[in-house]
Amino acid sequence: MACCQDTEEDRGTIQYLQDCAAEADIPTEFLFIEDIGLGEKGQFTDLQDQVISNLFKLYPWEFMLREMFSTKLADAGVRWLEPAWKSIISNKALLPMLWKMFPNHPNLLPAYFADERPSDMNSYVIKPLFSREGANIRIIENGREIASADGPYGEEGMIIQQFHELPKFDGNYTLVGSWLVDDQSAGICIREDRELITQDLSRFYPHIILD
Image (cartoon, rainbow, N blue to C red; front, side, top):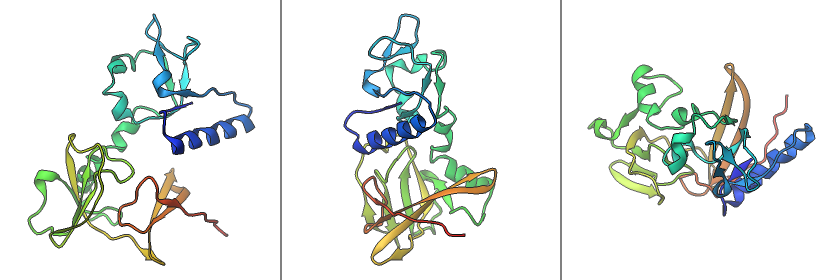
């Protein structure tokens, strides 16, 4: 299991997953992304030159595909526990494509590529294709920017999505993350922040579901 150096939240997540694996009697090893090497046969290795055959990593596929070793990803013989197709559904270019395929769907907000924004759309959010944790997000309301966040993204392109303000409780904007498995609800997480843009330091809100 791997994450980048100097990412305390990711390191904590990896530690939790290792604890879960230990409870299931699944042995794991931890390794920083920066310490993964490439063996003579084109296989990824750890610091002891042991071949890595199964890997869970908290490191975006879009970053990996830009790395020098990206040409080895397909034939390195690694079972990626977050498969490569995740790079497709994490790309925000999917949002305007979904809106085009399913216009006016109740679970979608109108979304367009940056150069296709309707002239009458005055309240919208500008999002980089690969943005994470609120980075490089800009919110425009009635033609005026009301919130923005810095970050390393944007050169890859932008999409425009209709602005829909998050619900606010006791001065906090609340975001619900929802997971579905076979069209059935499989879990949620709740994050809150006093700012409009949810980011990496936004609070996780403990919750319980009572039948």
